[in-house]
Length: 196
Image (cartoon, rainbow, N blue to C red; front, side, top):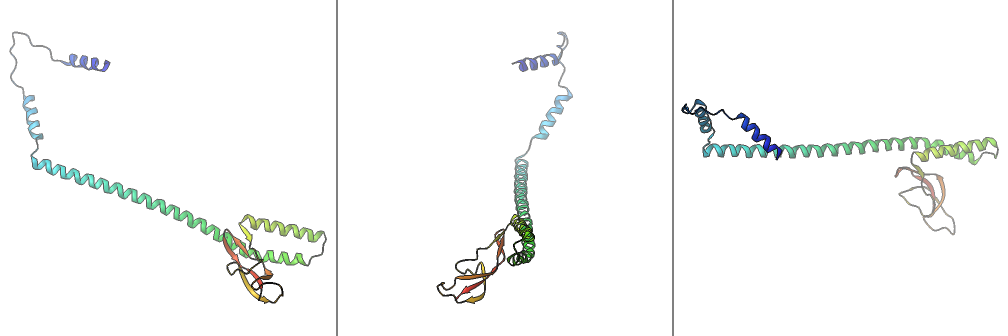
């Protein structure tokens, strides 16, 4: 309401002063002719309207295509980013697996040494170091494969046959070397002796 009053006031303030009664109104001015010419210049023919509509439709289509292309590029980039993140994670995991695989012979040697070590303070220190080594490997995702029960070619590598009575055929009778898996993938199969 206040805006309307302000607008009326502005209009009232900008009105032209009234002419004195004794003067006659002037004929059309050049400004009116100019306005008429501009209006006539803005009048479009049906062909011009049709051409402008076609141009507008073409620009709208181009804009829609550009938006679709931008969305497609954005989706491709997001897929590229995810794929590269996955490749980087897989590469890190492969590096960890390779490192653990290279350290497993050291662990085997610790275990062999402890099997034949006397029960003294030195051997107790070596056991503590071996336990710490195993814990460090576990932090890297290493876990020992189960090597008892029935032979499983997905987990075990049968290197010797055994003939033990009372043990079913295909049963593991001895573990010659422990197997390990790191982050879901086997880095070393367990070497086992299997009953015939």
